[in-house]
Length: 144
Image (cartoon, rainbow, N blue to C red; front, side, top):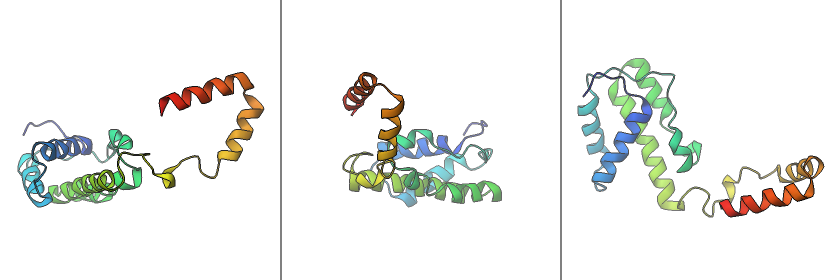
C-alpha cells in the first residue's frame, strides 16, 4: 500500500472494484482483503467522509449508513471499524439497487418535489414567463 492518505471515498471505490472483480466475494472476505491492503496506511481525514458519486446510485440515507461507523474508526484509529463502515454503505447501496433498481426508477417515495410541487408551480408561474416555462418542462422531460 502506498503512503498516500486514502479517503473514505477511495476505500469505497476499492471495495466496489473488488466486488466487481469477484461478485461472489463475501463481505467478511472483502473486509479481510481491505484490511490487508490498508493496514499500516495513514488514516483517512475525518473531514472527507462523503462519497459523492453515490448520490447517483442510491438515496443518501442508504449510501451514508456506514459513515458514522467509519468516522468513529478514524477517531479511534481502528482500520476494522473504518472498513466496517465502508462495507455497510456498500451493502446498503447494493441492496437498494438489487431491490429497487437504479435510483428514481419506480421510487415514488424519494420524489424530492413531493409536498412542494404546488408552491414550486406557483412560484414558477409567477416569475417565469409561460414560453420559458414550457421550454424548461420540455427540457426536463428529455433528460428523463
